[in-house]
Image (cartoon, rainbow, N blue to C red):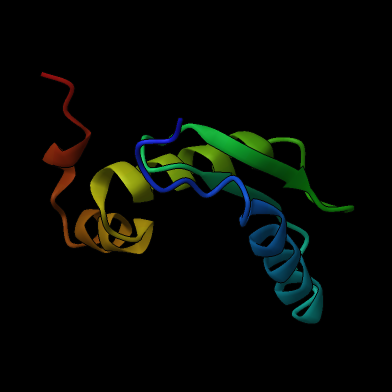
Length: 89
């Protein structure tokens, strides 16, 4: 019995849309889709995408979900000199 909404039924449609968008822009990327806990539901490395993109895409997806903001927000924060963000204390 399910007790909360899940993405499982929609993952294939989301992945297909992401792949079509990437191909439309000629992007060689890896597509990672995670659930609300950051757990990987789908991973697809498009032809031409570097091997390291699988780890990066998964990490970015998890960061986005767990931080509840796009990873660009973190990138901009770091570019502004707020490097304490990297601290593990």
